[in-house]
Amino acid sequence: MEQNSSHKHEATHCPRCQVEFVCNPFNIANCNCSKIELSYEETQYISSQFNDCVCNKCLAELKYEFYLKFHHNKTG
View 1: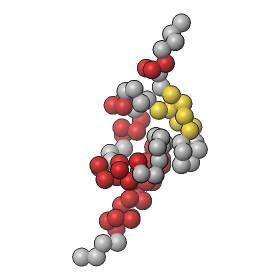
View 2 (view 1 turned 90 degrees about the vertical axis):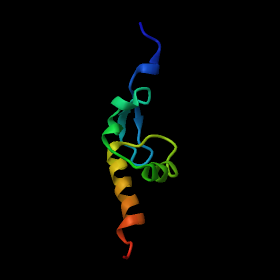
View 3 (view 1 turned 45 degrees about the vertical axis):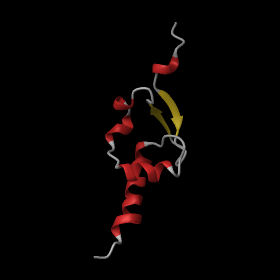
View 4 (view 1 turned 180 degrees about the vertical axis):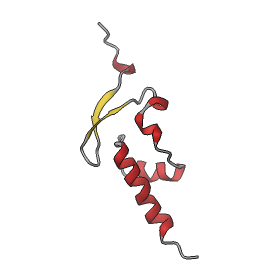
């Protein structure tokens, strides 16, 4: 019987959309969120809004939101 849960995946709820998803904070390289590439600026933008991990759907939406807010409407 294993009682050390520090190496298990954790079911959690996204603070943005409330969907349940699996987070693997103890092995971030194998966590589902590692499939979405975020720049340092995008990571800071998301971190400024949420203290906990968000689901991949929300990560992608927040990445796009960052793009729209800071890059899309720049005039040249």
